[in-house]
Image (cartoon, rainbow, N blue to C red; front, side, top):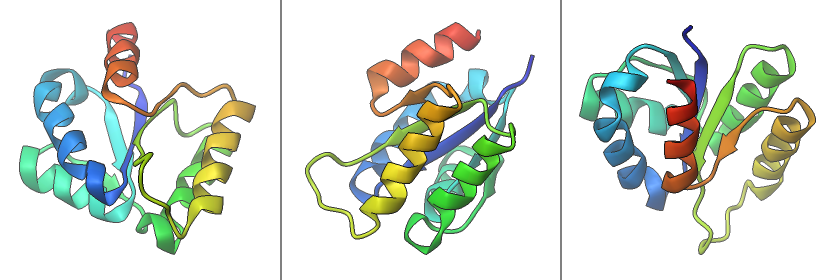
Length: 122
């Protein structure tokens, strides 16, 4: 059964997200993908995977995805956050992580966890 997967990556992590999407192209191609603005466009450009774009994270994209979680429209979040760089929209990121926890949505913050979640979906 197709899942609705949100893909998000901070700027320094976008190359890692693109690499992960390339590696998992076949599995991801069977699911509905969405993500924050720049991440979505870069994934689509690099891999050809269709990714519905919301706003950029700092402009409200994290909150848009959180709203989709709250109404039952997101099943999984893959969020490659940058643990070494301060983010000006950190409250939005924390709100997204909180809403995922409240609604019991699997969320991966690194490649190892993303791989585990994707294997579980298969």
